[in-house]
Length: 354
Image (cartoon, rainbow, N blue to C red; front, side):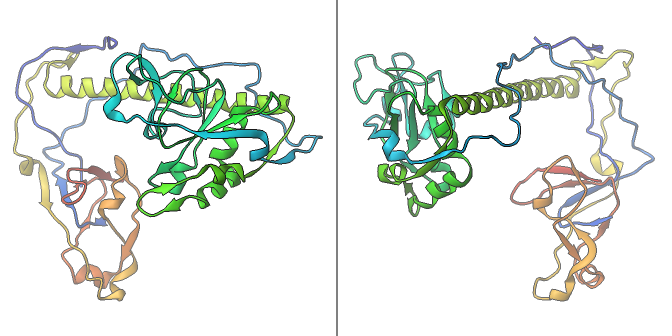
């Protein structure tokens, strides 16, 4: 349930107002008429009722610089045994049953630590099963950077699908989460990515992982490092969840306010319906100076392209043109405050020139 705000129901027609339209632009641009534009009502920002609980632990304080003991370098193949998952595909999934991890889900469903399984296969299914603290690495993927990613399975008996490399550490002197962090970040991640082979689909073999050399401190420090980053991941996940809730809340209010089911308290006059061109001084598309003339570019005039529409407001452009480029093309100078609308590629993308 969304928090109550001072809004009233109303029924009447409405129009979408625009802001005020100097940037040369090849996009559709609206330049508003100040005589017909009205000030926008201010909406008090509200925080959602929902609160997201984040993890806390006694090791969550940032580490101090330097340590007296040196880290040891070991070959990963000396610290673990290796195997691969087997069988199963998306067509085998069902709503309830045995938990299973498919390699494709490692890019979308899971992060560093896997302690909850979201997909299942029938209960009578059999295959390669996880042991608590197994490290899993995709054996196939689209890019070397994506494939060089590791997760730790904190559950026993989870089925591991095909195209998953399994690293099972010996003894209790190496922390699985610490090793997964090493494989997923920094220089070791780059080394592992460089060993991926293939074109449209790249592959990582067990030997690629086993031959890696890792630097590790004592088990106590490994565990402290692993726990520190686990807490950070939990905080990131909590912030993402909060952001998702705010996006949902915004969507609801956009629909409710612009359909006039909700009105701010004290506002009862019906909305006026107007043609958009009546509210603007100019509506039109721009143009692009010919790339055959280098002298048209690298000037001082900001030149707006679709790639510049990355947020609500545009404060800078990737390209700039010269006065000659402006004079010899359909591009035109657009005042600050104009609304731009993408005509091609990212159709409908909107931003205000800041």
